[in-house]
Length: 466
Image (tube, rainbow, N blue to C red; front, top):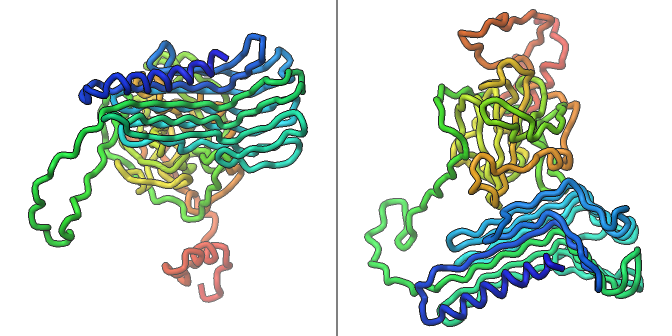
């Protein structure tokens, strides 16, 4: 119950601040945010919850390896949970993710639930919220905004319960957004819980009360330059974020054309596993590491040159060299979360600062550059949620549960990736790469206009004339 009171406090505090500033439009903005993974409210009994975070407040993040209520998990059980919030300037954000949800002895299950809430001086929204693979009383259910589903004669469930508004009153804009990914209400005793009990999963809430600044008259625009119509302002390039890492030297980059025969499906949660093909990884998050103190991510082991994929739609930035990460890059998704790829052997042509990429696009290749030269080839991968960015490089969450949930392709070969290795450093002591000709094929019939003709030529027998 205390978690729900937190949400009410956030809203009431923002509105109260707005009302008191009616006559002082220059008063500093008031922003707040709150999130939690799960909350169980039982009439007349202490409630329970996990992964709570609030801002401003004492907690910017909340994590939990799992949750069970009661101790046997009969009423509610989940896997890993993570929540993060941010309230700075004129904007606030709240993010929460919950995996492996099972409620009321398995009568309601879901692979994951994500709650998102954003509020600023100009808007409020819950974009990015979702519930994946929801099953209610044995039947698959599509989670729709504010969708309501009966639960026999003992209750009901609401999916993506949301509200987003940004009204203006007395010179103040009161933007507020709230989201509960899954809300279960019992109207009769059931599953070990009494009537009136509620279970809320994936809750996020954000508020921002800001003064409305009257528009300033703009001077008339000078004559348009050739190629730009009159009245159309020049396009402003959005500044790139600064990667939360120590600056180091930057040798020349190595580029490699990406394979042309890769198609990566999106996972149910909308993310793609970052390594294409066969790979393996274990949970080493938090283990001691030289240089950075502790392991901030997970290592995904794969063959040299295995393609690396953008895990989400977003913007590539900080492409280049770092003494620890070697060839590395960062990716920022549409919600502002940042993902770190390190120890690459090469970049694809898509890996350019400021380039917009789609989930599943090939952006680099597995290697062991930087401080990983003595280790097997692998990708060092980190997740930096938007709410933890103020913490710098330490603003990370354990990537293991997310990597485990994202769908991936395994045991896939790709002809365009064979037989390639990055340049060997002059200081390397290992034997130089070499090749032995095992066979040859006539490719003179291949056409550059037909992407599949080269593959067919490589598989065809050598002609008698050849």
